Length: 256
Length: 256
Image (cartoon, rainbow over all chains, first blue to last red; front, side, top):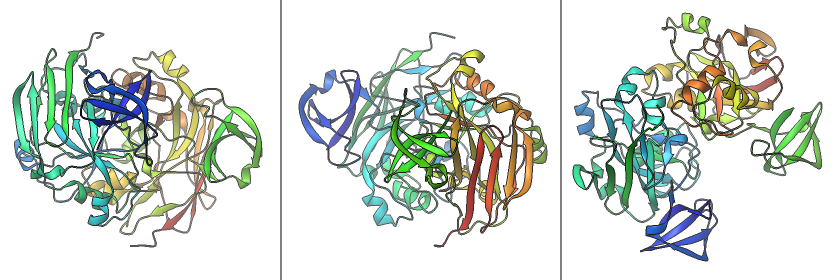
């Protein structure tokens, strides 16, 4: 099943995507069974929100060998999780805004995102696998000059609109057997096998949950193999086979 | 006014603290006016929760000259915000659990916490001042050996129970004219003027909001002048004059 969060009469609502139709749900499928209402909208007319606002927004840094080598970084020897911030989340089709002052490398990364479905602590690998509600797509946008100039990732990775997520959560897919494709205005700029991860989502959940309780709605962004430069005036698409396509126009900030 | 979040019949509810009485409120004072119900409990019998669960949990690293010098670190030249994670939050009187495997420095830091009351972006200093809902107290617990061994702050600062916050949000206090006192089993181990900050909360809000939208309920933990070692079997208290006292027993994890 595919679950989106969309705007219905100005308010967020969950919807079940069935082909071209988004059936509006009553309730939050992450909190328990959510029933279809009598309302539906065409998917092409839906206004997409991030499919979940996490309690904690986890993200992996270096997690693909090609990415580590490209940055001449040390290969990670254990699955150590990092963080991003909710203000930066934005939905499918909404613009990524390149802030005034960002020059040089302004890059997209197409990532598999795990959405946690239950509370867990000290999880076994089997429990980690059972804890997943579903999988969505994230675009981990970074302003590299800020990343190098700043003490933390605050504005380089967490400026408003830097974290598109969606379009929906797919509950029935093997996230490690897919292909990620990044396109700019329809041209393929990167493509890689999702399964090339150094540590997979379940490795991260097992290790993180040794110290940390994970909760329903928490998300883990799983890293990317390669980065793609973004330019205002273009549209960036992240397609992950078996999940869908996350598409966002790139704009330049109007108010310097 | 003082607003707490407490457990009422097993569910979180806001309460207005008036001397020894916690008047249960209907609604969330951070979302709009919240009215007193006919229910009340004695403050000494209340079960305190973190007074807010933030959408984004902001925290400042080095923000007091003595702390920077103690760590032989470079004095920050601009207010760059960092992050902590919601799983680590815990309330007044609940235990801080020292995880199995933590040895050496396991430290408390008593911090002023700003609670944001309105949405803001590109705030002036006056707007930053007006955006504050109130002030509470945070204890930024850190396991220093993990902090040095790990790539991120994940378990060193964000293990479960490492972020006590409370007991309440005080809406009428000048946070920069107070004294922070850290006690272990009643003995004073640190005391400093809150106003000795390198950058104050409004400096952080102005700079952060150049790139980032702040939302009601977001919190900013403002850093500490000094650290205090924690030992299982003791009680750590952070008192900030004009706000209150946050008290937590320290325990050792039972399940290694």
